[in-house]
Length: 258
Image (cartoon, rainbow, N blue to C red):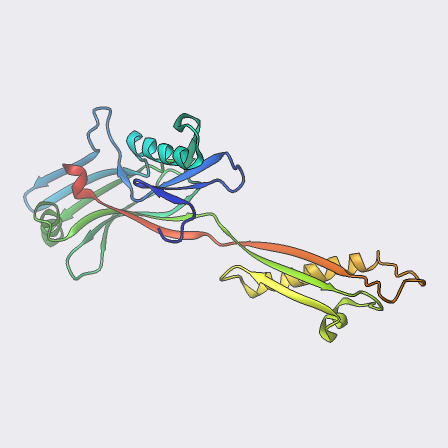
């Protein structure tokens, strides 16, 4: 969760929506169990001989208490009222969702996969029928803690990286931007987010050169200009590219059985 923007309140990470300042977005730390109207987790375990049948319902849905905690924290930091906080699920996409069994010292084994709803809270239903050693391992994980039965969501949060190119300098006598950059008459500077592609940097550089050429055509240096009077050309262009934040959110299913 360290790559996320915003602040942590209870079990939720919260940040301002970049396009709507009065709107807040949240992301739970981990998947939660889907629950029936009675509040019971939608997890079924059928143990028949050497066979184990599992059905698990999961989602990225915080409890009302978790939401209330986050709203209270936001309001306290902003000096407002919790009732006025507009808090909504993060705009995310789920790449995959898996029911996993992990034994000590071994890599996770996928018992079942699901295709979650594309809409929040991204509900998913898993179903697995296990036999033999796999069934015994799953039973051991649930009953004795020798191993872990978990649900994992692999998600992408939308984000962008930016590259900003700036050109500045005295335009006197310049007829072509690129030679002026090479000679040093115009100074090119770049400011880029970490991980920005070379293609985006090149796009920003090309863009600022075109913008500078437009500005150059507007410059007219009066013939009677005083020697101490300096003209200055300044151009700036920013380009962005998609850079989704990839995260894995995982929860222990055994805890949902309690």
